[in-house]
Structure formats: structure tokens, C-alpha cells
Amino acid sequence: MTRQPAAVTLGIVLCAAGTALAQTPGTDPARTPGTFEITDNSFLVEESFNQEAGVFQNIFMWTRSRTGGWEGSFTQEWPLGSMTHQFSYTIPFSGAEGVRGINDVLINYRYQLLTETETRPALAPRLSAVLPTGREADRLGAGVFGLQVNVPVSKQFGDLYVHANGGFTWLPSVDVSADGATRTLTSPFVAAGGIWRAAPMLHLMLEAVASFDDTGGAAPARARTVTISPGFRTGWNFGERQVVVGAAVPLSRVEGRGDLGVITYFSYELPFR
Image 1 (cartoon, one colour):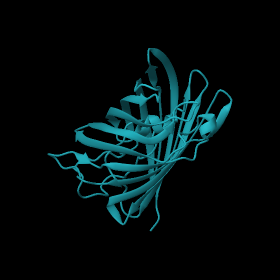
Image 2 (cartoon, one colour; image 1 turned 90 degrees about the horizontal axis):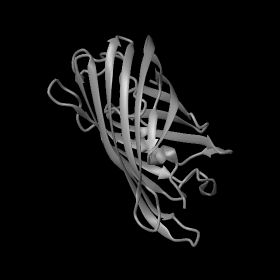
Image 3 (cartoon, helix red, strand yellow; image 1 turned 120 degrees about the vertical axis):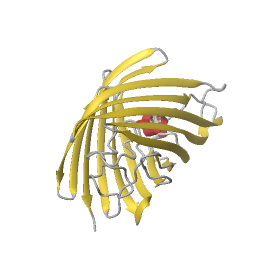
């Protein structure tokens, strides 16, 4: 049976990296007063703010579990003219049990449907193409083109930012047996996170993710993974540039089995105009 790579099955969860942004305060007039010095740098939960015009971001995240397996990802995000449209790509890679390599790459488009005000949250749906770049024989990829959808919502309450996600990964015609049988795999996920501003450039984080991965067997079944991850992030502003680093300790439970890991995070945001 072919399984989905972790960077795809958990989707945004580890996505990573996929769509985190860092914005300096006061750059977006549509944001509410008291904007955090660091935003859109969550680790496992996607935040709802597109990259501002003229600024792009590089994001690297690394996760290592107690069992010795590891996952990493590199993401680069670019605004398409303004904050309304954003393009990004995520290159995930992993290693476990003597096998290592690139997983299935994500090509992402995100639309800023709602900007945050004092009375409404920010909303920025994302659509991603899943490219079959991982070696299927080594269980690094699904071997097919697919799609991923996520709808993140974000709202600030004083020194607390709350984020919520809901989405799924869709992989058609995946090889699920030795005799060549195929099946479409659909794996939903939900996530939520809270960011507490302990100091202007120091935030305490608590994130939770639940994914329900289609196992691809003859009969439909899902493997449930629940992750709780406390952590922190901090950063520095250098003119129009911002560096953010952080770490977390995720505790995951997969079908009754627990695993403890460590997340390290690095982001560098800079102008290109």
C-alpha cells in the first residue's frame, strides 16, 4: 500500500511551512490597531494574512521525532502585485528507516478574501497543487498529481491571536495494492492555535492539529493523528527586514501510539522592490 508523505497528509499541519508569513507592524492599513510585531509565523497552523506588496519570505522548518525520523521543508512566498493574491511553493523532504529524499512538492495560491478589522476575522483560502516529485517506491510520495485545500481564519483579541484551519488533501488514482488497484484518497484535517504576546518580540504558542488520513486499503479507513505542540517564537527587525526563529515540542498520537518531537523554525523576510 502506498501512503501519502507526511508533508502532504498533514498538509498545512506541517506545511508548512507551507504558508507562514512574517509582517512588520503598521505595513497594512487594513489591519486592526495594535498589530503584533510578529505575525503569520505559526509552525503547524496556517494564519490568514497574505504577504504584503514588495516583500517576499523564505521559511525553513525542521522536525525530528523521538524515534529518529525527521522532516523538513523550505517555503518561499511572493505577493502577486498586492496582498490580495499570493504565490508560494513548498519543498518538503524527510528521512526515516534509511530512506531519505524529497517528498511531493506543493505549489500554492492564496486569496485574501477578508482582511481583519475590529469586528471581523481575516480569511484567506488556499488552493495547492500536489506534484508527484517524491519517489513512490520509497514511500516518499503518492505518485500522482493531487490537490490540497485549506481555509484559515485569524482574529486578534488584545494580546491573544487565535487561528483556525479546516481543509483536505485529495489524491486521485493512487496505487493501493500489489495487483495495481487504485483508489482516490481524501484526507481531511483541522487545526487551531493560540499565540500569546508575552513581549513585543516574544510570543508563546500552543497549536493543535488533527488529521484523518485515508489509509488506501480495500475498504475505506482513516488513520487519525492528533498533535499538541507548545512552543515559542521571537524575532528581530532590521529596517524592512525581519528574522524570526522559534521552537516547539510536538506530542503526537497516531492510533493509540504516542511520539514526541522537536520543531525548529527560521524565517527571513525582505523587500524585493
